[in-house]
Amino acid sequence: MKKNYWGLFAILFIVMGVLAGCKDKPTTPAAADSVQSGLNFSGYPMNAQDKTITWFASNGYLPNTAYATADQSPFHSGLKEMLGVNIEWIFPTAGTDSTQAFNLMMASDTLPDVIFHGLMADAERYINEGTIRDLSAHIREWSPAYYAWLQTQAAYDRAMKTDSGKYYGYGFFREDGGWNDTYLGPVVNKTWLDESGLPLPQTIADWDKTLRTFKDKYGAVLSFAWSRVTGYGTFLSGSFGAYSFADYRLYVDKNNKIQLANVQPEFRSELTKMHEWWQAGLIDQDVLSINDTMARSNALNKKMGLSFTSMGQLSNWVTDAGNANNGSEWMGLQYPKGDDGTLAMVPGGYGIGSNAAAISTNCPDDKLELVMRALDYAYTEEGNLYWNFGKQGVSWDYDASGKPAYLPLVTNDPDGLNNAIDKFGGSTWSGNCIQATALLYMKNTQQAIDANDLWFYPNEAVSAAWTLPNGMTMTSEESTRAAELRNTISTFVGEAAIQFISGQTSLSLWDSYVSQVNSMGLSELLGIYQAAYDRYLAR
Image (cartoon, rainbow, N blue to C red):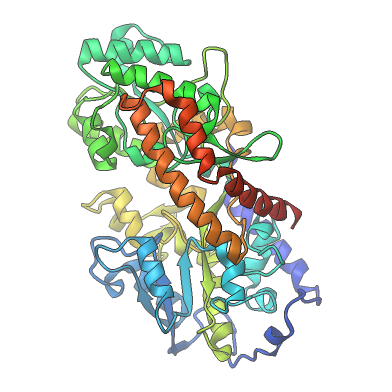
C-alpha cells in the first residue's frame, strides 16, 4: 500500500515553485482585479489579531461534544493562534441539522466571511446571484499553497471550478484518494465462522449459508446502522449488478450516461433476495432505526455476526471485544460477488469531498486577502499538520522515525482515542483541508486498516467509476427544477424499497412502480444531471 505523506508535500512545493515563476493571471472578471489589500503578509501567524473573520461551518469540524463553545475547543481556539487572526465561529444551534442551519444562514441579512457547507453543486448560481465571490483573480497570489495543490491533479482543479471556469472555494481532499474514500464494507465475526466450520463467505450463496448458520446456532441476524447502507449507495448491491441498497441513487453507467439505480432490473433482483432474508428472519427487524451506537452495542453483545460498517466503527468493535474479552474476532470481508462472479461496484470516489469553504460577498475587498490567506493555511505543510493532528508539542510530535505520533494528552484521553483526535484536529470527518492518510492509520486498529485494504485494492476498478463526481455544478434553473423532481422521486423510491423488502408491497407490482417513477419526471431529472455531467467532463 502506497503511503507517501511527506512525498506529497515535496511534489506540492515543486509545483508551487514552478507557479511562482509564472506571471500569467487566470482569466477573471475585470471587477475582481480592482480588489486592493492592506495586508502585509510575511507568513503565519499573520499578526492580525485586531481583525476578525466570521466563519460558518455547518458540519465537518464542529467542536467536539466535550466543549460548549469554540473558545474551549483546542482545534478552534488553536487555529486563531496559528493564523494570528481573530475568528468568530458560527455553528448550527442545538436541534438544527446542517442543511437547516445553512438555509437559515443564507437567508440572513448579513452573511459571514467564510461559509463551509456542501455547496459545490450550486457554486455557479451563488456567484451569479452575488452570494459568494469568484476567487479566480487572486487564488494564485493569495492562496498559493492551495492553488499548487489543485494543480497536482486535473480532477482536483476541475472540481473546484464552475462550468464557466471560476474558482469558488476550498475543498476537502483525501490524501490517498480512493483508499480513503472506500472506508466501509462488510465485516464478520471470524470466531463464529471457525466454530461453525465455515470459510470466509465470498458469494451471495455463501452469505446465505452463513446467515442461516449464525441464526440457527447463535440467534444472530444481519444487522447494521441503516445510514451506513443508505448513505453510501451500496451494501450487497454490486453482487447483483445493482447500484443502491434501498435509497435513491443516481450513477454513471459504462456509457457515461446518468441512470437511476432504483428502476433497474438488477435492483429488483437485489430487493428479491433481501425480501427472502427478511421473511426468513435473517435481517434485524429493527434495522431502520439502528445507528452506529446501537450497531456497536449489537456487535459487543453478539446479536450479529455479519454486518456492514466503517473502518472507524470496526476499530471500536475490535477494541470493545478485546476489553470485554468476549471471544469475538471482528474482521473485514471482501465485498461479496454474485454467484456468477458479478461485482459491479463498491462505494468509493476520487478523494474529493462534497463540502467546500466559499467566501461570501459580505467579505469586504480590504479583508479578502486576509481571509484567503487564512483558508490557504490548511494546504501548507505546517497548516496540514495542524488541521490533521493539532498543535505540535501539545497533541502530537515527531517520533524516532520522523513521523507524527500522538502524545499522552491524546492517547490517554478518558474519552478514547477516536474522540480525543476529534478534539485537536479539523480533518477527521470533513473540512477545507487535506485529510492525511497517516491520521487514519493512527486512529484505527490494524484489523480495520487491513479491512480497508481488502475493501479497496481488489475492487479499485469498480470503486469510483460509477459515482457522480463532486464538483458538478448546475445553473439556477437546473438546480431549482432538479430539487423539485429529486425530492419527490427520492422519497417515493426510498419508501418503496423498504416496502418491497419487508413485503408490505409485493414485487409483482414492480412494473407499476417503475411506471410511477417515470411519471414523476425521471427522464427530465436524468437529462438535467446528464447536461451537468457533460459540462463537468468538458471543463
